[in-house]
Image (cartoon, rainbow, N blue to C red):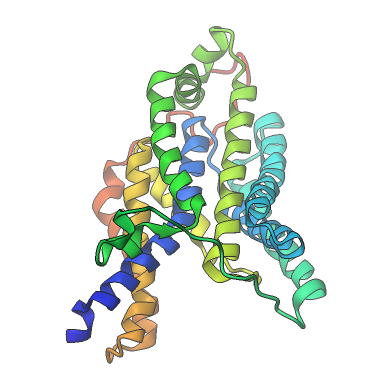
Amino acid sequence: MHSLFTEPFLTALLFGAITAGVPLLFVGLGEQISEKAGVLNIGIEGMMLFGAYAGFVAAFYTGSFALGFVVGGLGGMAVAGLMALLCVRLGMNQIVIGIGLTLGAEGLTALLHHFQFARSYPRLEKAPVLEIPGISEIPVLGPALFHHNLIVYLIVAATFAIGWLYKHSDIGLNLEAAGSKPGALDAAGVSVVATRVGAVLATGFLAGMGGAYLANVGAGLFVPFMTNGAGFIGIVLAMLARGKPYWVLLGALIFGISLAMTTALQVAGLNIPTDVVQMLPFAMVILVLVIFGRHSVLPAALGLPYVRGER
């Protein structure tokens, strides 16, 4: 038990929590944008998975992690484009289409991986790290929090930028109206469809970048089904955050700690059954839903297609 309170253990636990929490932060922020606009994006798991595949392929063949993140984002956006077409433009059921897109992305990426990498399982080199001068030397917190790839600092900064957009820009007001009172937004001369399409595409880009981070930085390789439900955890984070991106950041950190614990407890040599340790993240999801789920507030028009004149 004493091994749990050593500096190396605590540093590894916090570092692992950041690494595991960053993909959740990407998808949580993306899902929040979509839900604010009134689109329940169940397909975000598939967007994240396809972004992981596309981002890994780009980084593997070019050697550029930056290009891998961009291509990963575009890969997620491509899947989101189908969601926007079928659900926003044509008004199909968002849950059914979302599930279909996730299953389709799982099958397609598994097939592509089989033909490309099933025999070689190539890995990327370690992702470049940006150390923050001065504070990266602080014991435990320094190497755990300020020794990451540049994309980690950018997504944390983006969290606050999105929070500002929600409160102080027309974009934030339009998103809020598209999800709560789409008729009023339409009457004001702003296209509800265009607002929702933009939100869904932004969601796909963020989810794809989260998948690319998972594959290129977190694992260093791509394997089928590697998102392992992270997209669905992002949906939970978005619903519980009540429209506040800062709560998504906090939630991603908490879930990241629970995911990192699955590895840290086994490395520490504690005599706990492996099945119990691996169950921790999912038990955390259930616990958080029980405690906070009843107080979550969702947009009035969430999941409903908008047809001018019907409401």
